[in-house]
Length: 77
Image 1 (cartoon, rainbow, N blue to C red):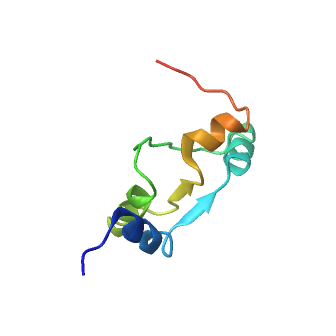
Image 2 (cartoon, rainbow, N blue to C red):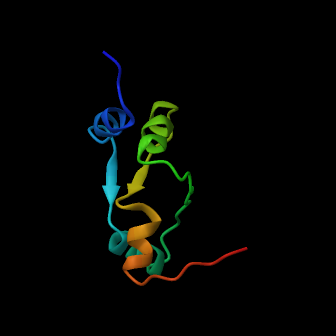
Image 3 (spheres, helix red, strand yellow):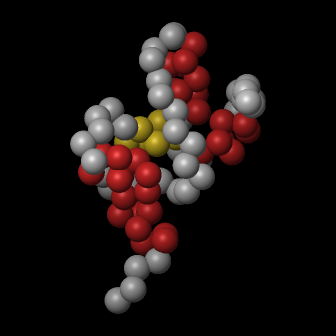
């Protein structure tokens, strides 16, 4: 049986924590230290980081699209 990307994402989501755009925005507003990594792939990066022994890894539910839709600001280099 071959696994699809959707299968892999579904499996990864059983092991990762997702936060909403509102939760991340609140943490940033409260000056909680955050390191944000933009990987442009659905959910798998958080699972891999945890497997590599990184702690306190969270995935932004809905990604940058939900962040923008919530009306939160983006900065560009």
